Image (cartoon, rainbow, N blue to C red; front, side):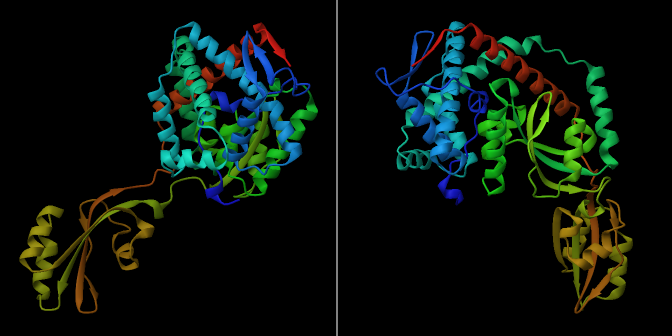
Length: 412
């Protein structure tokens, strides 16, 4: 399916729960009602519209079997959204229409579309705008509720950050993998057969070319869902031992089979991998090239080199000699012209290379700045953010599970 035929918009907690198991509606009767959640109605039309939105946004091929399966999953997702909105309303959280509009504009940019483009897409697919807006409203309300009620309970100690930081530093010289993940929650399935069917279907669709980020945003309950499942560059040792074993066996571009763990069912994609340590070809150089015409005497060029102090002064001196001056800005070594690479590869910032003849021109290369590739960018703030995201996601799932347990839900 061509990218223009799908709408890969990002969503949060609400949409990530699409694969939750549900007690199916027995038939399309009782005035078109699919379920009643604490006296609030979910219509069969709501279910059908959300199913259509799911297929349009994920890019998964629509079939009678998949449609019926997703109708059951979508019904449970709609029930969860009702519970989330009810809980948000209880603490007086209200989502303004302007917030929904802003969110839709952001989603449009992420999908390389305009807001008008998304609305046109929905219209072409016979999906009402309210269907997407309702989904976004529930997501925003639930995220606000979760942050307000749980963020203050999360304490992350410096020792914990230190431990994670040390692990990351040790991983610098190990082979690193660029990994994406989808996590399916086992608690959301009533039978092992449901787990097998859905996870196998997801892998099948991914292998057929459906975009991994679109599926991750729709299905994954991991904190990475909003980023399309991207874990970034990691060492295998940073993963669950079972996942570590799987990642080591994958080749770039491959999708794993479903991997059962105590935390849920994982589906992994290996985007790329590279050897540990720094990569000299990725060192960045800011090079000033001074090209002297053949009419400039050799002794003047030698004097220019011997008098070099700074790039700024060199530029002024070069202009007086009517030399051609060009500055590269910080660029990776591998992207620079071959003669320049040979001249500067071993130079530090503030050093100048001997003159090099190139036809009718003599070039002098000066390294104005240099930033070496460290192999991995390790940030304590990012480590703390990752720990926070994981903990608040667990709290949110637990609270939603409690809401389901206490709710009065009648299926029609």
